[in-house]
Length: 430
Image 1 (tube, rainbow, N blue to C red):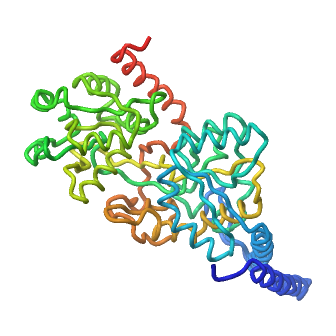
Image 2: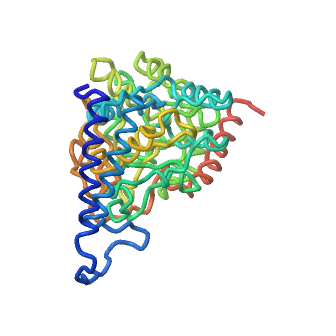
């Protein structure tokens, strides 16, 4: 780290005093200032107007105080799933260097991270400041009262001005619209069905014959691959395929009937572990895997290392509308209750959602071969290194938003129950 905690604290206090004097001078310089015409507001009613110079100076005093308090605490503890920890680490490194606060990211298998947090809270141990996880796991913490409302923490004008965000609103991931906020989302213009395959079993001619997602149920496809397919079990038996099942049912071009037929058509082998599924496909134990985006990413990476595996990708077919997807643990964040480093928690939330934090997200998060940052939901940050195919088109409001509309959480439960009922029927669970 370039700055010590003491240096940051002293600089912040010195700047604080200077800013306070400037504000007092500005406020007392003219007891009867000349009236200034009020401009017609252009922001939506709920948006916070751009602060006046005096208000901005007051904010800078408040921000300096918060940064100094956070530096005194010295730590920020984040509990994150695998992708959230890996993808966001470079962003938090920047925060760490800027504010002299050590960022500790505790990670592991996402369910293990979740259970550890729940166990700590149930034992009145509060050791986590921020939680980066998919909405299904966020919901489990929320149901036991383990998350703080986020909006009262927002103090940065760039964060509170809703006109600077997609669709002039925050993208809440929870039904209550207050605890879990999404800050990035990808536009999906490719295949709806998530799949990966072994290139020793699936040749280029097979891939070329798949023009639309419904071709996965074409007679030739079923005849060739029946009995040679692995599927990730749906929730609650696995979280690996949750979003994938939801997307298939939710998308207007597919739906429940298609999902039912796809699950039953191949006499599949069922799997619950992402890594094991990836290894089985790469080792040639099965030709295809369905319903596992993490598995597909793993297969794509192994393919680049020379193994016979690949992620299936398909350009959007006729009549397939692009949709937003924002359910990854690397795209949403919450604040656990009774944070051990409350000032650092508030500073980090505001910084991450600010122009600086979201610019860092677009430049640094998830940057590795074949992977790109998820585009920020802010309208005022550079596209950075995000994939052009995954960026929102200017001015477009997408009708379908998978795993990022809080009202769809209850619908997702019904969809998971539907998929689970098919799975249970197939494997003989009563």
